[in-house]
Amino acid sequence: MERQGGGLILGLSLSALALVVALPMLFVFLQALFPYLTEGSFRDPFGSITRTLSEPRLPGLLGNTILLGISVALCSLVIALPLAVLRGLTKLPAAPLWDLLLLIPFMVPPYVGAFSWILTLQPGGFSTQLLGIDGGSLIFSFTGIVLVMSLHLFPVVYFALSRTMATVGGRFASVARVCGASPLRAFLTVTLPLSTPGLAASLLLVFALSIEEFGTPATLGAHAGFHVLVTAIHLRFTDWPIDLPGAAVLSMLLVVLALGAFLLQHWIITRRTYVSVAGKSARDEAAPLGPWRLPAVALFSAVSLVAVVIPVGAVILSALSRTLSGGLSPDNLGLENFAAIFANRGGALDALRTSLSLAVGAALCAGLLGTLTAFITVRSTLPGRRMMDFLSLLPNALPGMVVAVGLILAWNREWWPVPIYNSMAILLLAYVCLLLPYPVRYVGAGLRQIGESLDAAARVSGAGFGMTLRRILVPLIAPNLMVSMLLVFAIASRELVSSIMLAPPGVSTVATFVFGQFEQGSPGLGMAMSVIAIFSSTALLVALNQMQRRVSVSAD
Image (tube, rainbow, N blue to C red):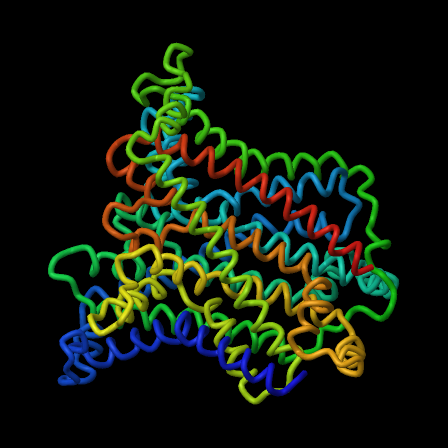
């Protein structure tokens, strides 16, 4: 890499990462340390930490947060494990179709999923009207919160574990069975332990996503009397008197929990070796299902029914209902809510345009910064690359609520020459910070597949760093970059936590519009917007899947 050009890009990229990632975290730490920082004073250091940690409610909030994360991780494992075994180790009929269906729950915004289950199971809800089943006592409980969040997050475990098991294959278990082990013992002592990296990574990721999730605990937890750290942080920003130091301290606790989860994952996967690939593909050794073919399809169908058909069906029925009190009678169904959306009722179209424009901006900015960061960290020997790598992946361990708190503390200052706070730029910064790891990882993976001999050949031919990037490397990693940008676009277009915390007065996004419609008692209009968001995300999902296949084919 040309030293001068690389150094310039390193400086620019590191400065951007400092503004987007490091600055918010620095202000959260400083605000937690110095409670009067907003007044320009450093008096009473550690005062807010002492006061917040001594609050009688804190042990309950901390315990509820940890309990929720562990419970959702275990419940997701119970749902995903049998599916992953069937998908990874057997010749499952219509396997790509099941993969596509089981991705949909993760693409449905969690707060929309929570609302759909409320409308389904609440007294007088869809389940009561259709089946005579009143599930209000279930949905408005800790168990209901865990089930709703698990049905949203179990695809994380399913895809990670099924791919890991497909890589491990069945040949090691076959050797164990030749030595006298039963099929169950061979699975428990050979296949499952070799799948530990994928299992640990997915479970710890589910834990981290659970403890930072705001929408479901906010909608269901209030009815169940179950409060966690994220809802407590939000309360300190929305209820008078506003408690910025207390919110910062709680945010640091949330970061400690998330970082602890990732450190535990790292310890689990590095304490032993899990090498299972020795040059022969394990995918060809998938076992035929034989008489278990029908039960396997029935299991996938049942999970798809509960995780996909029921919540998405509830969203569609709610969007088509003129009034919820009118029930599911044909006279109460129509397209009025969709007409209201396109008539810009309540600023619906404005919210849609805002979300789309912010998502496009986030995809472009995160794609550019992520690509430059990946180039520096993967293809250079510059001294600052390790710091860049750390900063670019740090958002993986930063809950969205903490990022929002940090951006408020960092940019709500009079001495900034450009007013960022209370503008659209603050939302763009939040989205880029939260979603930056996607392009860094995707582009980095693509660069690692490109031999460095191409860089050397370009230098021998007289090409500088910029021309090497533009003419050789960028075209080769373009598929990976496009996949990551599509993913950033899809997630940014429905992001709730930072949107609800940072949206300027009078500005609404898709997420805040849907959330606000439920709070105002207009769920039909909110669900109509959700239908648009879900089906557009699904279309992006199909496009993403096709692009990933093309990337795989080109890599082969």
